[in-house]
Length: 316
Ligand code: FAQ
Image 1 (spheres, helix red, strand yellow):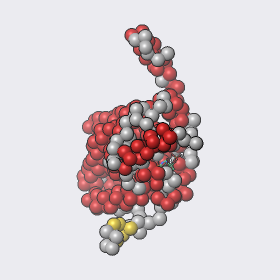
Image 2 (cartoon, protein in one colour; image 1 turned 180 degrees about the vertical axis):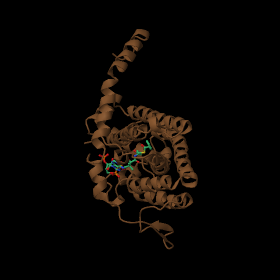
Image 3 (spheres, helix red, strand yellow; image 1 turned 45 degrees about the vertical axis):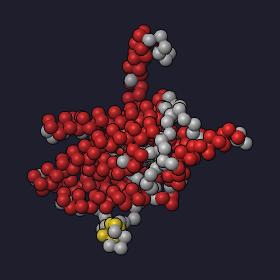
Image 4 (tube, protein in one colour; image 1 turned 120 degrees about the horizontal axis):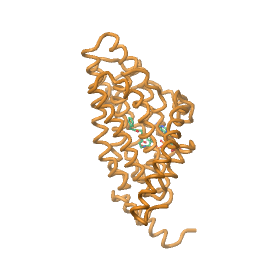
């Protein structure tokens, strides 16, 4: 049974959500709101950190110094995004160690997309164009999310993602307009492999998305999985035309009545297999993260020892 005081707090919270107010870390919030946000923000942070791995694979093999410098900066940005997001998640009460333990133990998810391999240099351009493109489509509405620390983190993240998307598109445009036939074929092959996984990033269809209704009610999600997916497809078709590549979906067709592009059936069995840990690179990605965590133990210990020397209040 809930106390009268708790019911009043709940009513006040609902009013603030309905009015479009932002909730700050120290404000009262229902336990499930806190839990959902901790889940989403920490999984978002894990995605950024795991997302460094597929592209990191190509830093040492970038074709020119310019492309290498750009890729280094991008991968470093993803690390930064992870850090802002862990900091935002920590304001909800769990420590960074607890959040990371969720990733390392396999309890917490991270985006399905980062379980696919980066086989050629064209994959790096396609990740920028399609994966960052999908990420921006999903993340711009989160800048207006009801939880203020998350919304604030997303503003800077979206600005950087938009640079990432353009650098990917630019790399592909150069290959498609100035490249050899083999380079053009490499771009098409990368698009064929990344297209379907990138439209799966938005999550399951709305009628199979257990969290959407409540998260929309709370203003955590502002647009549903299917609506974002449609917006992304609508925006991407013309970009593909400019690039001169074919999207690998024979059912992609403009629907005048809907004012949207129709698209083919998504292989949800593949999506759930990858989310469940059985994608092409799941084991490798998680093992890399666990190893990085273990290898970094001496750095964390040294940083704490240094902090304790300089501030008696530092955590022990
Ligand atoms: N992968 O009920 P819903 C990036 C899970 S961008 C894995 O619809 P929700 C940038 C979902 O967690 C990528 N799992 O869930 C970058 C839930 O399971 P749970 C990260 C997925 O939360 C670019 C279950 O399925 N972006 O990193 C996926 O309402 C390039 C049922 O689903 C974000 O995290 C998936 N694709 O909606 C970095 C954005 N989809 O947790 C490097 C913030 C769903 O109950 C290089 N997150 N699931 O055990 C969100 O907007 C939402 O959490 C969704 C899922 C839309 C991802």
